[in-house]
Image (cartoon, rainbow, N blue to C red; front, side, top):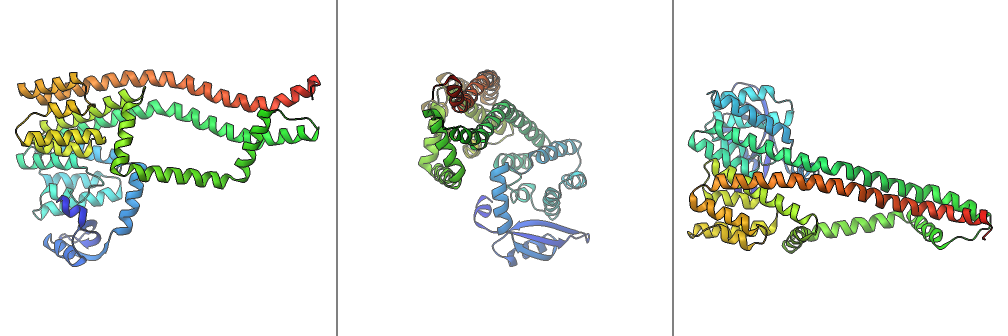
Length: 411
């Protein structure tokens, strides 16, 4: 299935379902003919079909800027589906109920297409696998296990809890960053406004009076002149630097350099390390708890960890598992996981309580991270205010110093 998603084009279709209703959706196929053939096998008559290349590019760009497609829709869908399935309502009926409740048109079309495909005998996992912009590899892997073991309702409940937990963690980080970002944005805006609009007018009047300018005023005037008359060059240079950095970070060496640097930062490094390990532990414990094998769980975790160094450690751990060895050693050797946590993993592995031990590790790291975030947020705010006040004070000094000299007769 993964190869199909990666190498085959996707097609958007408008069609008539077996009950005569107009439906829209997407299908992965080698060609338009193959796409129509797939739809006919489901009992769907395609009235229009076209390749989704342009839309995919737009989705890719939007997803890179805004993140995964509407997480709130996915979480609510998963939660409601778990309730329906746990109430012993059939999968197709549950999907039909959800179609009536989903407010977002695009996601409603997705669920409609999945329902129609399940009705024709296709597995829920395969139908879901064509919509990776909505359902990630963790989601699909767990659904596959739940569908195979007949515990789909319980699995979707587990996924829902996992996604809610992940969203709460992300919300805490975003909340802690909002105030400092607002201060920096407002402060930078004030500095640019004073430097490009206020200061030049004041200095022009001072120069008309024939007063000599101190060095700090001359320096700021030069900066102001460059910002006003050559702003497009500055913008182009900044854009080029950002583009070059982004391109470098997309390479294997760039990603390794970035993650190594982030983990070695003096203040934020330990916090990032905690988040990486917590994400690894919570994801692995959730996958193992859903019934996925250790090898498959590690394969999925390696794709969603988000840190190259940790990814390499997880892949080594998977190779060791396949050869019959333990997973704690490569995790310890990575340098990301502390010896204490690696020892806890080893103990859980030997005792057969690895899932429970990973969950405990994740909870402890998350509670510790919350405390660190609160302390950093409390410490960063006054530091940012002092820095902004320093720059504003420099601008004020550059404007007022010539006036004070003139008032004192020192010109």
